[in-house]
Image 1 (cartoon, rainbow, N blue to C red):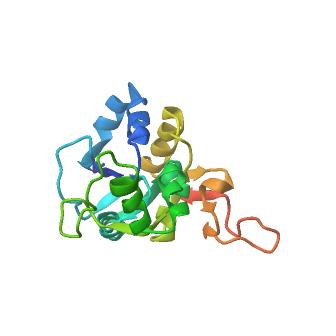
Image 2: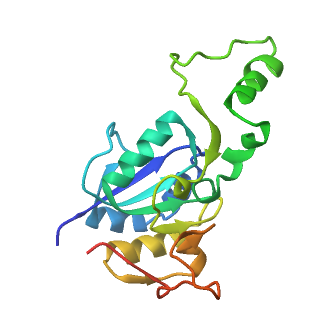
Amino acid sequence: MARLRLATVWLGGCSGCHMSFLDMDEYLLELAEIVDVVFSPLVDSKTYPEGVDVVLVEGAICNVEHMEMIHRVRSNSRVLISFGDCAVTGNVSAIRNVLGGALPVLKCSYEERSDPAGMIPSPNDIVPQLLDRVVPVHAVVKVDLFLPGCPPSGPMIRTALEKVLAGETIDLMEHHLSFGGYGRPRNSEGSSTASSSSTAPS
């Protein structure tokens, strides 16, 4: 059996979901027997590769680098899992949306609340250009599975990965397959039109 190619991606979030990933403890050793981790903040990899079987995406889309990255991730991955509440809803990362755009956020951070006052970074500085609104992953690309939680628990992550990586059909609660009108379509009664399962990569 060919080894599967697993990736994890960290966008606009606190890395708590990756810490929870490490909470899978001894299962990490079992996981290492069946997958190659081809991209992750946990390993030394710089470029998101092609041919990824499963990817866990932590964090919301906050800046232009995140936007470019999530499109590359979607193009190069068979199963994309929205990993944690920031990826699923925007969560804490999206609190800044109430300020109304990128410029008010920068003015507040660098001029109004900074002591001494600083300068707003220019678009050519090393700080990535902020988007006017923080958005969840499914607002930009198709998501195959939602794992909510702040963070999702280690056992929850393990359960999802065991099924997906084994190529099994996984039975999930509907909110893991459809969220905020995205994912599986619903019928007029408000339930999923497909069976409540998600087919893993073969």
